[in-house]
Image (cartoon, rainbow, N blue to C red; front, side):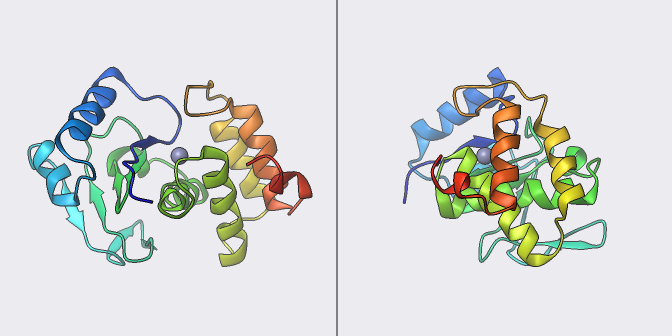
Length: 177
Ligand SMILES: [Zn+2]
């Protein structure tokens, strides 16, 4: 899949964010991390895959680098080929949510644009890797539960219901993607 992904986690994409996305799409089919960095006038840093460490924890997404840029109007986002992280906002999250947010954006590299699919991928990864338990799922639901639906994101309660189904491997999770 080589389409442009410009994905905000919560659905709170601002006008500025949308303008940037539209401009980037106009300029490049798939921006590279370097092109993205140039677009934000160098106000960020490209962290190579496997080298991102925040609060003593390592965050990685296969061989994808992460652009750390506090200009981003969300906690994190993804283009095809790399992730973007607003470290200032991201740092305020408890570790479970840091893991979830990063895994969600990483998931878009593998599952495409679908938000529910990305959520499902992230919570299953968390369970497998041991950073997500039932209490952590409650934390995630509290985090996204208040988010309103957007053209790209189902409403928080629906996402939450789906996340719970994925975490417990309910058959429901395999039908609603
Ligand atoms: Zn997403």
